[in-house]
Image 1: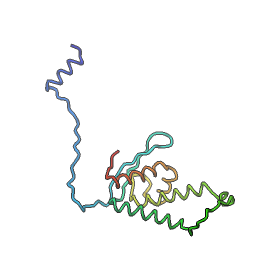
Image 2: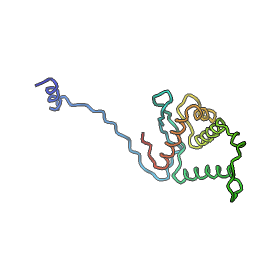
Image 3: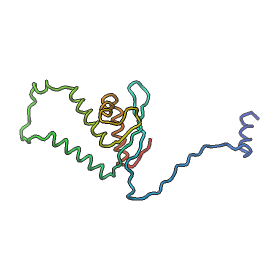
Image 4: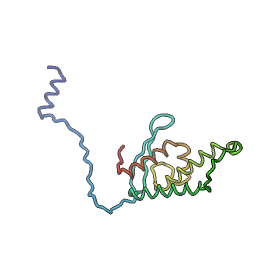
Length: 165
């Protein structure tokens, strides 16, 4: 009998039981109407230099209906900002107007909108920098994958009630 089989048979006798680390998750009593102010979630995202970054976000708790109202309000604000009198005729694009397009301005506007949204859905994080609009703007500008992951993970958590990894 080989050493492996001898060790295995000794272990299986019960004289030397294998120890297993069992992690029991605490069960929480479900009480309707007992809403938390916020909930934590560690959000992972790819880093440009390779590897994986992670931020432990403190998200503001919303019901599914409240989340829908938040999105509706943001969509309405975007519609109001873009509102122009409707015309039946197609509008030709003036080449001079197209020449005024700025990618820097476009991306800056997108960064500001992402930061504004993150300020509405979060109330903290585990970064060394204090949670503030300036820090969130910097995050959105420097790590766009992080802002995308934070936004998507919040939506999934609130819509589906799933915090998974």
